[in-house]
Image (cartoon, rainbow, N blue to C red; front, side):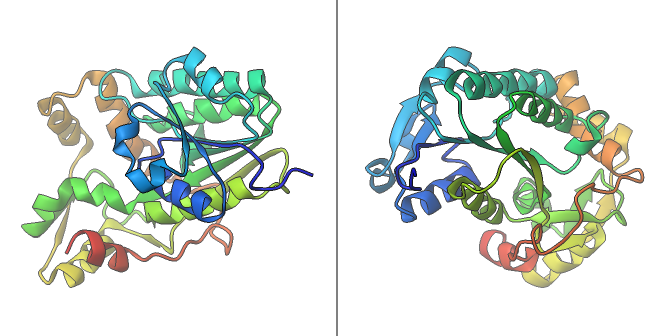
Length: 292
């Protein structure tokens, strides 16, 4: 029987918020993971000495197949595109992942997906993650899709306005979302990668500790920051105009705005909250560390 330390585990986006946590836990578990990334200089020297690196671009199918040769387990994340159509971009990356799984006979794949992918269409750029789910499912290999909630770290993009006491969002202020710390997603991903007792196609949501509305989020942030934070809803047409003014191409405007538009009108996540899908880090604890 192949032991955990003997299995080859490949990690994509290993310097990201989730991937870096996955790498740390694998190393602490005695695994020497193989990392796919563009630039190995982004790794700290101590980590670099404990991993194998294959530099390249996940958009290059030949590279992905070569870099995952002999892999037993794959952690796949679709990195965002800086420009262009995010759905088409994710679909291309998903095709590369599926090709590697088939060509190399990778037994287990854990894919970082999103709540809303179950809708399949009409959720903005999440539709691209849905395509990747379908592409990986079609390989016939064992696949777990981690359908993650709304990242706490998205709030960092609004740090300046939060300091001024304002939280603007295209989401309805009374619509509850599952909110999650990226670190906790890494914990769940690492646990699945290290386990070898699952088969077939699985979905596991990563919902964070509680569903929160943006009104509740503003209240929590106000307590942490020590001043009132007022939530303000931005209508879809105004939000799209803001994105265009920031220089985003129309496909990215549709991808970004489509998430809130497509998941706030009566949408309920398919994967129920349970002890399996609930993770521990609260918004208040995260905000104390990263926003205060």
